[in-house]
Image (cartoon, rainbow over all chains, first blue to last red; front, side, top):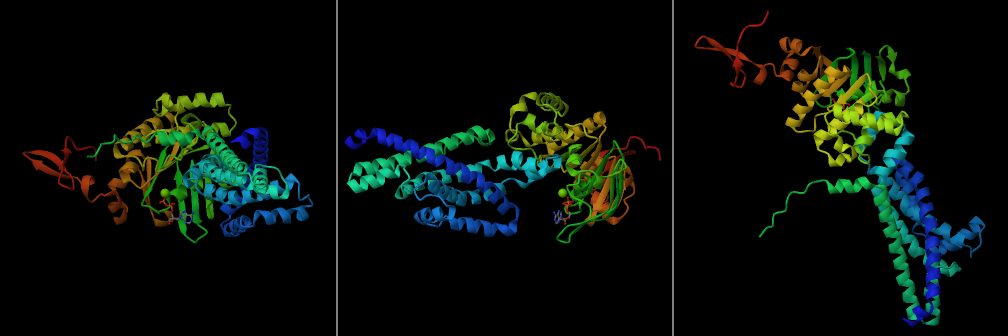
Length: 224
Length: 274
Ligand SMILES: Nc1ncnc2c1ncn2[C@@H]1O[C@H](COP(=O)(O)OP(=O)(O)O)[C@@H](O)[C@H]1O
Ligand SMILES: [Mg+2]
């Protein structure tokens, strides 16, 4: 515990950096995945193609991506942008499929009814389809968040600071406690994101809990 | 008045859902389209608000060809009620009812006031305004659906098997409620059902459809019952059996009516005018 106590300042600083760097790829990935997922959902023919291509992105090893991106985009190997862009790509890879599935999950009857009462397609998408896709979108976003928080640690190999520093530094100096601290804090950050997303979901989708509260379950009879 | 003139609809997959359909649906009356599943009822109904566009023929509302009216605008002035209520599950009852006025730009407060009045109109307790649709019974959801359909005070109300999914007792209740509403509101109602009893109960004009939206017979319930135009119609309305096939039996000089199943239906009090 002594290493942890002596380096509390460093751990907290790295944790804050880790949180800060995770937010952008999660949000960007979500936003970029919406049109992609929509096209895949809307045009059946493109569906397999888009989802397969996007899915393949996820199979590129992160280290390879960190090395490929800088010359492609003309950015520095050691810049934060390099890691942020790579993580955004992974987020899109996961989220595009979620968006397509989320839109698919919306009850077609509700969609038809919305059209029948006079929603234009644009307003129907944003005020009916999109919110009703919410629960499945949220599930996808939670995976993205955890994946991003975890992948960010790899950024340390190209010199971008994060909790990953505790892994490499602890390993080089043979301090097991430091490595463990890195693992524990990464898990805690992942759980923080997950918890925040769940709370956000509850706040934005009150009807999902109303639905669960309703079906008056018949009184349970204890069976001997 | 809604007028179909030689309207046909062929879907992209080649299905001829409606074949050369012509009909006048008079204003302020209830026209019921009745037929078995797949006879084209929903397709006919949806052509009125352009959810489906006719392949050929003309469809006019009060002399105006619907193909010249922008679909979204057209739908916002026609009430639409469907089977599984079609309510938006993520909106509270009050917001569901206020949907179309809000789309039309009516301020929220005003739209909500009107929504509460409509809850009274359709016999819903105002306490339910803040609930989500999933927190209502099937019958209550249908009432909300009707209230939403009436929210912009449309001249035309389209109803696609609106009471098809609720239990018989609630259905009977909702049917009576619709009759009462119709007496008060005087809308042009187009009502789709596969239930001939419901058709006879609600319809001023009843149109019996065969496959492809072909009209087997149209008329008032009395006309159809008195003179079924074909064996198909007679069989469809059950004129030859059960509770519609009444016969007179004389018991000790008094005449009683017995139905096709041999059940006593009542007593003949006095023959009506010929
Ligand atoms: N979007 C569609 N594409 C292809 N065929 C359809 C479509 N909608 C309805 N049909 C077909 O058209 C016929 C009439 O359908 P519909 O109007 O729904 O009948 P009903 O409401 O009387 O049950 C049926 O054979 C049905 O399968
Ligand atoms: Mg139908």
